[in-house]
Structure formats: structure tokens, C-alpha cells
Length: 74
Image 1 (cartoon, rainbow, N blue to C red):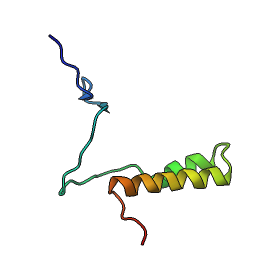
Image 2: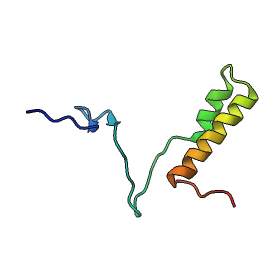
Image 3: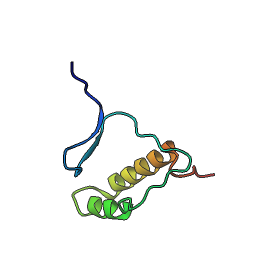
């Protein structure tokens, strides 16, 4: 009998794969989260237009709101 799990850490602990749901409790903390500005800089350094970069940033912001990480704009 075998068991497959969608969430696992590979041997050695260097990589964790989330294939299912990652749920944060009310007292959870996220530390050392990658700098979002770096991602935007990487986008602007490629062949995207300004409008495309703006759309990607808006998608990112909406994802943060939808996930509850960021409060919606009032």
C-alpha cells in the first residue's frame, strides 16, 4: 500500500512542495517573505510593456487581498 500526499518536504529539507492547501491560523506569522519590489523590478527588466507590468502588479495585489494577506482598499 502506498500513500501520496500533495504537501511534502523533499529529503534534505531544501524544498517543500505545496500541492494542496496551505492554511495559516489566526496567530500565524510569515517571516522573511521575498521582497515584492524585486519581482516588479524583474518584470520591468524584461520585454513587458508598462501596461502589462501594471496588470501583473494589480493581479498580485488582488491575490494578496483575496488570500487575506492584505486588506481591501476602501
